[in-house]
Image (cartoon, rainbow, N blue to C red; front, top):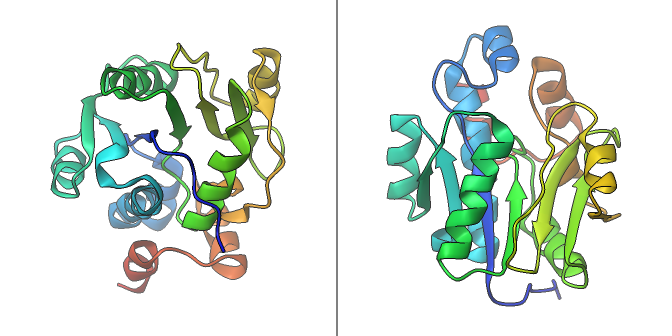
Length: 207
């Protein structure tokens, strides 16, 4: 039986969208549809765990805004001052909705399985703040808080060490779909060979 997280979790997903999103992946494949599909599979996995109305999408791109609203997600405008500020805007919106348990999940995990996210949130329940490093152990896939307070964030290259230095507890979870992000053609091909991609990403690749 899969674990179920305690009520109240919200998941914040920043989605840049548009021509500037995931430029390395988009340019190598010449297909913006794959980039969007990667984000949409990530959103779908999160929605299966916490429900569509507890997924907070941070974006300034009109197409992604329309997609998220149609899917029943909360939409927050990206302030345009970087990834950390976008995530903080989403966390703040979740707190305004009454959430105390909030996880920030980057939108580039097309192989994320709902059970992986469930297990991660359950593991994080016992900590005020926590994070999950990426597969290489240097980046960050997810940061969470159970306190209802501000969440210190430091995404970017080498962020795992910075998040640990900020006091977030590193979680060791068996979650390959969560820990493997897709931001270029090589990482996408690795995921295709070793993981189960979500249906939107698979469909975009088959077109």
